[in-house]
Image (cartoon, rainbow, N blue to C red; front, side):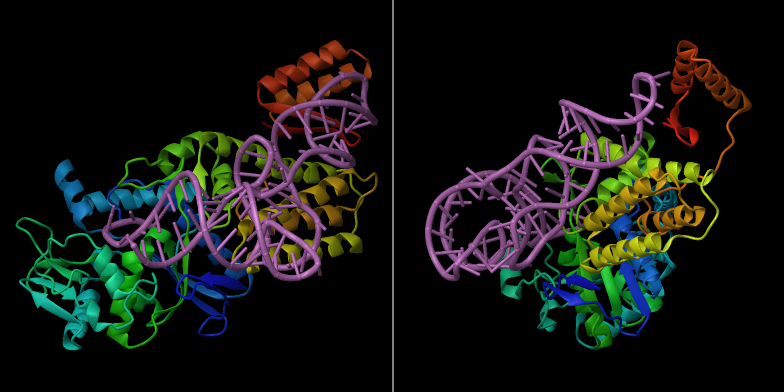
Length: 464
RNA sequence: GGCGGCAUAGCCAAGUGGUAAGGCAGAGGACUGCAAAUCCUUUAUCCCCGGUUCGAAUCCGGGUGCCGCCUCCA
């Protein structure tokens, strides 16, 4: 597998540090509000990456944090007259509800910043001892100039960053590019004890401390949205490598934005579309299809029209699985035919080739469509073996379902007796050439969301 | 000012040197009692201008338009 590494700006062969074990860290949400579709893109995509790595036989340890204390949380909690903890817990819950709805699997660890204060304090102390950080009136700052390679991820030199920086209002810093490791508490603000007095950790240090605790000094994959590249990830590298003296991350992956029109979507711009609202309106599969239909490093433009189109795209997947199952009932018993196995192997190779090429989900989806086409061809054959049909169904379940989460093979559900009776009655009417009656029954079922399809193998039905 | 990205059919979208994947929508046809599903056929001077090359959507130069980062943000 090759992945594009933001740090080297090159596609590189992916090789974990420890053969088949992969350590993976994705920056999670700051839980002061509901997440939006742009946030969801990162979490959904990297979950698919994790699934694919597992499929490839890797043992993946996946960590995603919650930033449950920071300025925005404090502000939001004050505004609502509640505690930071209560607010954070509420939105962590909401986060999981959104992710569950989208079919994003849980990480192996979801550490919270507030539960790792000791680790952060330890790291900050080490940085001070090594001369990488300094205390200033209860705050602690990282001395960015102490790392000569600062800027290596975002490819900016110290000078360039300085010249582009806005006027720095914080006079406590030695240098405008220094960043806070520890922030002194204001009166009545949530705080923890530390060698520098009461305060709370800076944003960046939490990822350094928590990733180190759960995954070790060097991570294989560290990922997130492009907006985290600078300063967040840049600062993480500086801190972590100063702290441990080791390389922090082997492969940096950053996904593109979800745009509103041509503008980026972000909480701070206030043009967000929240997942909690979206999922009431669209199927989770359509949202997944939308987010995976474009290569992860390219931007996606959000629009209702596009997602509606994705719903239609999805219909072929649904029809294919329905038709495969229906055909199974009349197919001959027997193992899958060699030609079918052969074709499925080809499709597997094509799927892997797409994903191995910097996780090209757009191409992987087109392979899914090829498989669907093959499914229809096979279903239409006058004679077909059950093994062949179930092999195709299993393939779709595996690649379209387990990895991409776009194919949902529904379990058999018995139709209401009433509906069964209607289908039966319609068949009798058709046999008697009473098409008026037959069509009336079909229309009645259509109104109930049941689509009837007459095939050489009998009546096939599906829910619209 | 520095760094970077994008521009492919009505729409979504792959494609980093060999002559434009896939899906949606549209049109025509097959199948059907009629439908539906399916199948077949059909739709692209790859933003513009130069250059390199036997050959470029793909490389180089120059434009135009849009966007991102340099500041909290997936």
